[in-house]
Length: 506
Image (cartoon, rainbow, N blue to C red):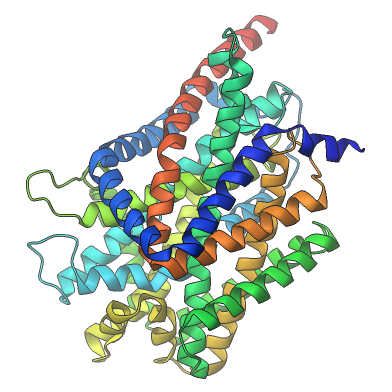
């Protein structure tokens, strides 16, 4: 029996997490109505009882990272003092962008601003007005800006610091080692943390895959007239799974890297085309004013709840976004941590919190701004289409542009390749997390995780649609949010000790 097999057979993290996910998949497949009812109840309870916790935690992460970057601790490297970055600056930024410009942004780039335009986030603002459009863009910027990336950055900083500076393994549990190293039950605590991280990652990835599957389904309906039903849905899942398995078997370098480069090139081609053929000046003005509104309302939106009115908008949007990002963070955070070796904490924080969010906001300004301009000044009904079917957002916008047919086909290809690369990348990360941090987990482990991710994405979207995806993220993210807070405390402790040691050497 090889080391890889032993790492699987003797690893409780692997068995507990796979059994748990399998039970969830089977329950949703066998009793979809009960699953949907339970998902609805869980969503209502979690957003009502713990919404405040999500909001305070995410704001804390932003403030902590800014403090570390601007303080004396910002000079500490994620690696030995004399180490150089593994990747040149622009290559590193490209890797961050390819990681962040994913299915979620393609799905919500038009859908979110048009949803807020149709139903304003504030009860005092009239819907479908110019003020509603401005508010919609400002809130969309907030959801895809610095706060979202702060969640990724906390995980990435912790993983990078302990793995490269302290020569530890890359497991999530290792990032809170300073807080539990004196406890007798530290091994059990580490396994619980890693298991929760695995479950959160599976659900976060499945949520993104589910969004992508729904959008491809909507695109096929819009472009080719396919029936938007379970058969088409399962067909997309099956094709995605086959492509993922082929990519996984060919290896990381040949499969995922080629697809990642293809995604990045295609996403910029599509964005540039829409920018040029759409309302270019309006897009630039929207982007500029959106940045101003984002900065102006940052604290207000970061802490906004509705305890006096009972309005559920913030729970349905902001809290869902933070929970989804937290669930997705073990995967994205681990990735950006591992590609940031040799960079200082200041470089890491500034790079992650500024450049990828700016690219995301530009994407929203290009696509969301184009859709808003068409509804406001061209008399189209994209917002109405989005309200009827959120998956049609991108394609309804493309229908108003030149060469809409090939553009829509390119978008479907783009979303599909994102599905494959996300599943491929996640299976590697999950394989490593469930084999004691192996850098190259066995193929069988990656295949198991790929199948389970596809299965839970299919069950969530078929059983309860978008609400099922939102609920899964909320519930899975709740315990991991606690872990992220502990991780932040551990980072502060570890960095302070490292600074004292470095000062003594000098």
